Structures are given as structure tokens and as C-alpha cells.
Amino acid sequence: MSTAPRQKTTWLSQMYDKVAVVVMLLVLLGSALILIFQIGSVRRQLTQGQWDQAPSAPRLAKPVDLGTYKASLENLARPFQMPQRTHRLMISEVRVSCVRCQKPIPFNAAVCPFCNAEQPVVIPIDKLDTDADGIPDFWESKYGLNPSDRGDAQGDLDGDGFSNVEEFNAETDPTNAKDFPDLAAKLRLRRVITEPFFLRFQAVNEISAGVFQYQLNLRTLERTYFAKIGEDVQGFTVVEYLPNAEKGPTVVLQQGEKKISLVKGQAVREEELTAQMVFLLDRTTMRARKGDIITLKGQEYKVVDIKRSSVLIRDVKTDKETVVPLLTAGDLATSGGG
Image 1: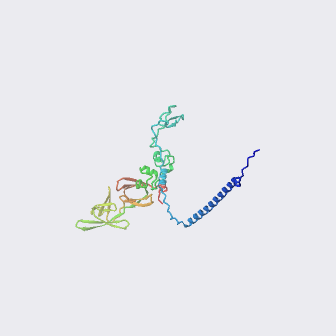
Image 2 (image 1 turned 180 degrees about the horizontal axis):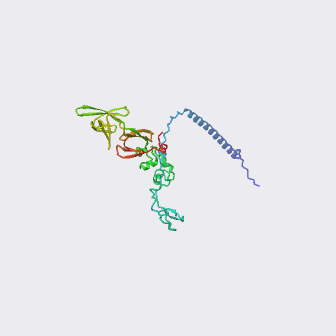
Image 3 (image 1 turned 90 degrees about the horizontal axis):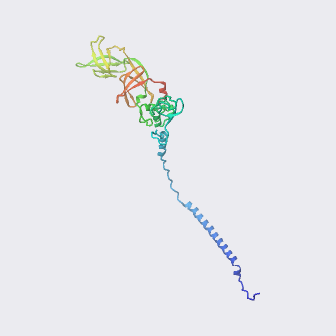
């Protein structure tokens, strides 16, 4: 048993670990209290700052640029078409079935290499018309039409009043309303009216020595004309005066190669043809005789000849002649007028 004296221990050394724990708890508690007070202070500051903040000025929305969408719509109307390729490396050639043995043969084969059967004549690609609507497939594909739908031939892509088949025949752009066929293509003959000649020779006046003026009245007496030799009256030229003619004083009128003799005071028995026509774009009607000038949206046309089933007109500017056909029920059904 040891006889060494024992060292005395103090209270602090015995309770050191417990004191340390208590101190740490107090520090943590104080930190928590300080944090709580700081959070509350910051919250009050934020709340007050929201009320004190000046209202922001309104910002106007920028207009949406529709350019991208417009291009997309145009692409839908005229989709990209892959052209036929003539140089094939890894792609097999186009083949069709033989009309007899049904085996695959080259598209351009005139005779089947298997059964020697003659094949139908190959239609050139620029003439191929699958739906038989009068418009080749390549043209329909070029402008976004359906080569298998014959109904789109009577459609109007650009809304100019001319059908797609009319635009094709006139070699105009069916997607451009400013590029359209000749307006005369929309003129139709409703009927031809037979009327007595519309002028009568009523009197002759000597206005000076050897100079005479001839009085010509409309058959309806609505108007009177005074003309000298060489002057025109309603499309006819006064070419000659025969004072001693067999039937009496006579004035000779001429229109082209046609001559008409008017005896003073007598009605002419010769009949005149008057064409009644309709312009399909706006359904306006007009009457015209041979030699008259008609106007279609500012373009002038001269009536060259009138027959029972057609009228021949000529563009005053270009001298292009157009035959105006008879009006049909189909014309009225497909025209854009109201």
C-alpha cells in the first residue's frame, strides 16, 4: 500500500467538462437569439423598401415581326420539289411494270426484255398530265398544285379572277395577281341582235361654194350628225355623194370593205348585227357593232367582225386579235363576278 500523500482536487477540475458544455450551450443560444433579431430586422427593412419603392414606368410591348411566318406560309404554298436526277450512283433507275408479264422494266423501255411485249408510248415528262386537267404535272408541282387533283385547274391561286388553267394557257404566273392573261379572255358573247341599219340620210346643206354637209340621223331620231366627205359617223366614213343617183340623192358610207348607200329620206333595209357581250370578271354587259371600240379596265379593243356564234376583236395597242366565244353556263359558274 502506498504511503504517498494524495493531491487535492478542486471543484473546477472535477466539473471542467460540464462547465465547457454549459458555456457552449450559452454561446449557441446567444447566437440563435442574435440571428433571430437580425432576420426580423432585415424582413422589416425589405417590407418597408417595397412600399417606399417608386412605381416603375410601363413598358410597351414590341410588335411581333411576322416576316418569319410569312416566309413559312409562302413555302407551304410553293413547297420544295426535288428535281429528277439523271446521274445515279447509288440509286436504282425508275422502273415500271410490263403491260403483259408485270415484271419490272426500265421506264423508257419500248419492248419488254422478258416477254418482248411492246410497251405504251412514253409521254414526255413536260407533257405528262396525270389528272387530265389540261395542266402538265411539272407546272402544277412548280406552283404547289396537286398533279393528281383535276379540281385545282379551276382554282385561282392569286385571286385575280383567272383560273389556274387560264394562267397556264397564257403563260402567266398563277401566284402573282399583277401578272394575268389578256382581259379579252374573260369576254363572252351573250347574243347577236339583228337590227335595221341605224343611220338615215335626211338632208344636204351647202355651207360654202362647192362644200356640202350631209345630215345623218340615228334611226331612233335620238341624235343628228352633220358630216362632210371624209369624216366619220359612228364608225362609218362618208366617202361619196351621188346627187343624180337612180333612186334619188345618195350618200355612200364605208367601213372597211363594206359600203352602204343611203338614199335621202329613205330607211335602209340592210340589217346590222349588234353583239351583246358580258365581261366575266365583273359581270358588266355591253353592246357593240362592227367598228366600235370597247373598253375593259382601261384597255381598248376594236370590234373587227361579228358572227352569230363569235365576235372578233383587236387590241388597239398590240393589234392582237381575239375570238370572243359564246357564253356558257359553265362560264357564269366559274367567273368571279357577283
